[in-house]
Length: 222
Image (cartoon, rainbow, N blue to C red; front, side, top):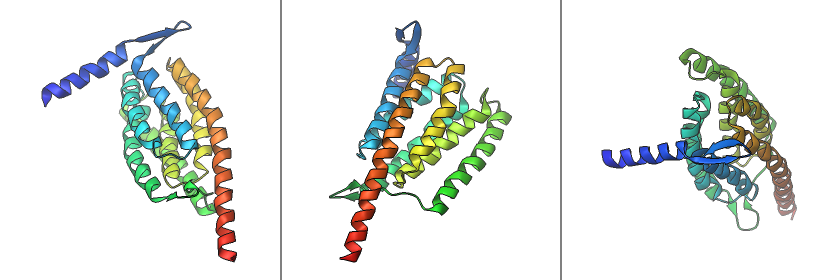
């Protein structure tokens, strides 16, 4: 067992210390693969396919190693939480499948939107104080906002709420300057690409949610 753990550790170390140089910027294999997987997750989520979640698991493992090595405790810790939420999302989406509409999505109710906002504000405050107290991050507030925002977004995504795309826009807006300040320029560029995919995903899910709602109204009136 210990030999297996040791081999995995050496494999992760290899991915962190070997990479490629693009336009003068060195990128580790772990960061490259992790962010490509994360980018694929957004692409798959737009299409509401169950493959969204297993690909997310792969991204989580790689990015945990990247952020831990960059001393971004919040970003590293969120990968552990994302793993747990991914299991929930995978389970929830299997229960929300419809033969006509695929994974059924909807717009959140006012109470759900307020709950998301409250969780983001309160969670960011608590997490930032914890990171600062533990000296686990050199930028505790944006680090905490990304951590909590990611959890809120994935939780809402698992529940099939359209508003999760808007939370991702906030996470992207905070994440780009933080990644640049950390020297993770490739990750910052990926975050910018995320933003474009997020806008398209929000439009696509809204269209699907309206179709489902109209179908339900027609079914109820017939």
